[in-house]
Image 1 (tube, rainbow, N blue to C red):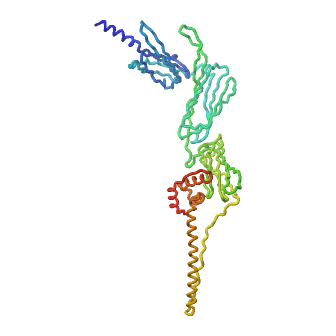
Image 2 (cartoon, rainbow, N blue to C red):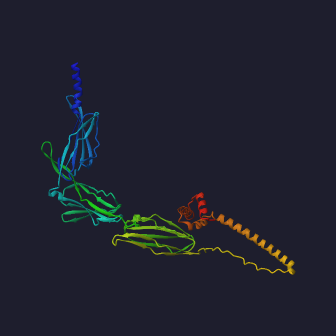
Length: 469
């Protein structure tokens, strides 16, 4: 019986011995910006790899793994080396990591890392800075963020990788191409970000990072020096931006000019006249809404606003049957230089329509009242005949007048089925959102050739609401 227990013990022991986790780092003392490799050496079967995303409050840059097989006294064991590269920014202790091995949780040993300030002339080979001309802004106000990287000409850089700063709370309007120049013993590279704050309050622009790979020597296990590539990260400064709210009733901020250009000022009936609205300046152009106006008796079609650098353009077409005036296009914004609200406008434009239709005016003719007749007894018979004649004539005239009025009434009712007639009758009530939607559909149907179905029930309610017949 004891022999069987010994045999069982020998079968279990190898698994107990080789189920282990050991942690180590390649450098326990580093300067700020230097990369560290954290390794877990895991022995055993049925290993569940731990999910490690951050070490020392810093994101892991890359991971790798190796597998090795060993045979000791006839026992086959596997071991795994999991490696995690990161750049610690302060001294810290990496707490024990839990690893599941064969259904059992094993803990690694803690590892301490010391991070020292940057020293030595070699670190003057590279310099990364952030700067801006404004640190107090209004919401939407445009400003430039300048990133400058200086590299000494004789520095031995094998490779590099730039990591942009976090720009949460800002709109990125433009990023320039890198521009390089020489300044003494340095090559200077500059990149400009054109941005605008999205909200009021205190916003932070975090550190930018530049990872530099350079050659170095390291002793192997036999004490010999071998050349290696070592990465080091250089950090920029941080920036704090104070953002203030815009005055009430204003959404635009900056400095703008506005102009309206027309392709022609004289057109034929139902011919389109094209206007281009241009807004030039520095500011939050993306917050400008459409300039499409509503003009009585004129169909207006607007294109989507286009923005390129400091120029905003919008094209608008006008179609009409009579002369009309294109109103001035205006823009209200907050001027950061004068700290005042300004309103700018384009000029009004008169449009002449050749062979324009004359606007018909409704006139009502009233008959003059008949004079009273003094009736005498001697003229009774003649008077009776005259009165009978007049009554007959009046009845005939009334019958003749009633029939055209009925026909006119029917024509008016049927005329509402004509899109152009209906469009004209609805224009006075265009401020009503439902009426506006129907007007847009009618315009697209008449002038764009689109076949669109109107909501007859909604149209009927609108005609009833505004007593349109």
